[in-house]
Image 1 (cartoon, one colour):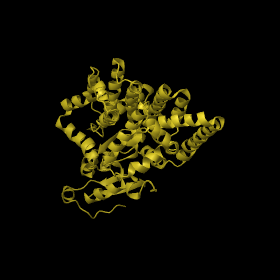
Image 2 (cartoon, helix red, strand yellow; image 1 turned 90 degrees about the vertical axis):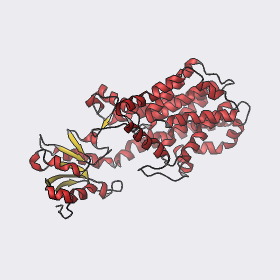
Image 3 (cartoon, rainbow, N blue to C red; image 1 turned 45 degrees about the vertical axis):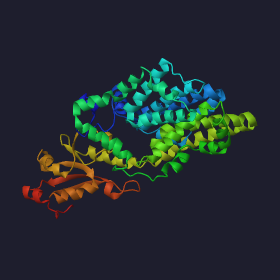
Image 4 (spheres, rainbow, N blue to C red; image 1 turned 30 degrees about the vertical axis):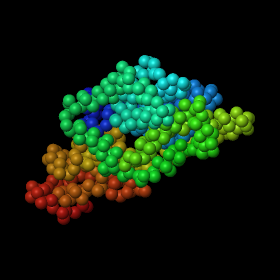
Length: 455
């Protein structure tokens, strides 16, 4: 919609302003579409894929600084082969770019604080606050907590206020404010108080659990994070004694920083009432660093057998991911029938006829509707659609659950085709392609007649 309207400040979705979250991820995708000539799934997934690669490089870079070259290679490979990287890195979602900015900000601090001093050179401060601002511009104030909590936790571990003062008492602090909150200020000036209501629902009410999407129980991250970090969860568990000893040593400042990063984020996400697995992505990279260090220790003590073990392990993991990602998941992609259904039915609409998409909200099918369409929120708006042409019989794409609303308002619906239900798509959520045979009379519309048939 940005490319159609030219309004990059206020993105539109279904002819309504989309201001629930900041737009950096939308800007990235729109810029790719503009550069390469329109929508494609590859371009949609590209920001996540590139962000995943950058995170692996950042992990390896930090490991090289403190644990050595071989540990850096192992840490980078560990990061690349975690389950969550495979799952999230291939999705066209905001979480991996968001995690990349969080990781870049915290790695910048670790680069300097892992040594003896807490000083932050002006260039490092600028980079840190730029990354923090971009993280806020990607997913909102959650970035402040995911960056701020590790700093507070590390300061407590080191019994020093210096880490906090280093990031606050710098002129570069204004950079994160301008980059992170400039868009919010512009939206308030443009849209007004409505924006504050959206942000309250998206941030505060979601954190408190007052959200329309289903959440998970309080123990969710206790079992989901070990799975997401596999196969390196096993390495962390087996090396727990070594990790404990290093974190408590006088020279273990970088180890304490990494644990501050993970533990503070874990606590924050756990106390939030709304929980989802992708929220944990920004707090998991320190585990890869620790796993790489442990693998390096293992090789140092065991020698060639350990080297062969890790080479075989990485090769096996890569082969598994190639088979699953290249064959199993595409073959069993539950979206394929939906996409095929949409494309086939849209192609059957005569030239010049208007398609109305009714009540699909944030459905993922819009990119596959390769013609202009008009969106209506519900069938209360369908009378205007019926009176707008097409012989009073508008073409409708909607969910099956909305048909009862159509009949309750006095419409007779001629169903042309319906998507087949499946384990992933229950019957009530399947798409229906239909025509409204007759607009309701004013009397029927007023009384919401309930006894019309659906052929």
